[in-house]
Length: 306
Image 1 (tube, one colour):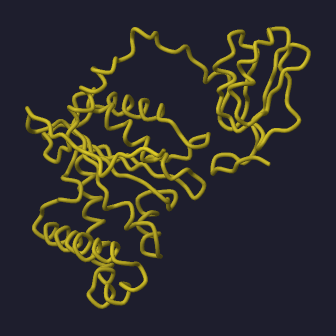
Image 2 (tube, one colour):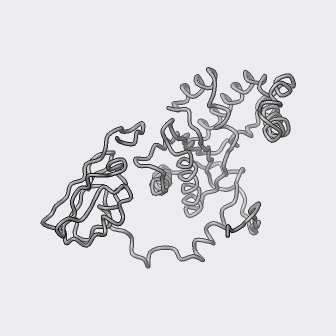
């Protein structure tokens, strides 16, 4: 059996070049599907894999003799590249500085984000770790202020048609079924969001995505690991910080366009291919203001199990 995704439902093919193999066993130890084994001092295919090759490429990347190639599940030997030298990598302090400098920016200069920077953002986000290859993350790009503004207007019109979702009668009806926390979130967060988005839109003010010059929606598919779009979006945000751009996550849009016939119409209109367990909108642009201070954050708890 092969692990299904929207992109492929077949196993990848493992190609072994025995004349190059030295029997070091690195590939066997790295393959957690147990697709490989050592026999007579050479790597061979195992007869008891868990799923069959799902195309992680680890064996191909770790082999010092290039004795293994993977074909299929969107992967091929052409996808292998030499890792950057260790001295080119950021050290911890540099990485921490990058993380600390990132702020949520909601005010952007009236300046477009250059296409080359968009390509760099996507290239960095493609390096994000994923649950199962090949990546089932999809990206919708709104690459101008006009597009983000139009999207925001459409979203507000969509919310207008869905106001029953935050009506007093519906919240009272659902309270026994979805519990205290969901009731509080809908009453004290989602309902005010509906009201403020629509009211401000009617005044010509966009607080959905702040008329950012660039927005990206990272979302998955019915098959994807729910974490994958969030991880990719996070990688994109830190890439933007390194490029001099400000970013802000928009948590409201995704959950409200997943369920029901109206949500389906909205997705289809905006070329969103799938409903997705998790997803994240991120807006990008050149910050209008300069921040001189950061804000230290904390976790709700940190504990160890003994």
